[in-house]
Image (tube, rainbow, N blue to C red; front, side):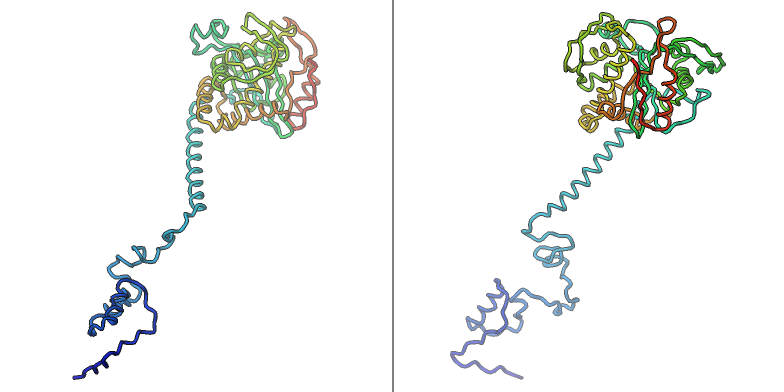
Length: 415
């Protein structure tokens, strides 16, 4: 039996030269020597310092015991992958990145939902495949934009307020061609009193063949067989293919203006018209739906009634598009949804026209308002029977060729 030699009286144990971690258990370990306590073979340095190599229990080195305290991710243990050390500043770049992704996904979902809803509201009712003997396609996208005197869905009170009268059915109140081209956009008003030939056509409802009718006013085509015959007549008399058709009635037009909160317009010269309800002073002003409808319908206040009115219609539509096709309307749901809701259920378009095409049409009109292109009347050569207007056909042919070939329009209207 081996015995430890007795310590000399007064001798103190030599301190270990290796630095030990501070802590309550280390202090207890040191205190045991300092107080000259008897050696305890079961009191190890690991117990004193809180360190456990793992060999005493036979576990693999570095594996936390019990999967709890002191292990990876546990309190006081080493941080796991991606964990932020205690007391470290937040990683704002990471937070901003995640927030941007969440915001982007939210905007995408909102945009897709809005597009789907708006597309479902469109009235794709005009079948251009029924139009016969069509001209070849050109390099520009062309729209025939029609304002009708439809009173569909209007109450007697609304008809009185908007000065629309109570005539049954509907007729064209305004017509214009919008050519969206890379060389510049062009808006051409077609006076409804234009003297044209209504060509032979197949009835859109009856399917019967009808012979040509020479010497008629342009708005008679719509009255005879609706949008399909109007497109056929415009194509026949101009040689320009119409890609899309868009038509809006009185109520829809006024409702869109009101949904936008009115449209700002500079009226160069004041005028009054009892029939349309117009009563305008010159200068900058904001027109509500009722005033806007009166502005575009007035004809009897002007000497050249139909031509002067078409100029006002072009001016107002460009201003309307300029205000509608802005970020303040497009990305603001409190303005976008009322505007779409007010217009789409009264806007009649062709079967192939998508919401994207409709947006392109508005942006093309906005471009004209911003100086990217021009607006004009169809060139007029003089008067014809029944107070109608005869087109200047050499100029019309040159105008159409420039649009077909996506060339800058240089033709000028002479009125």
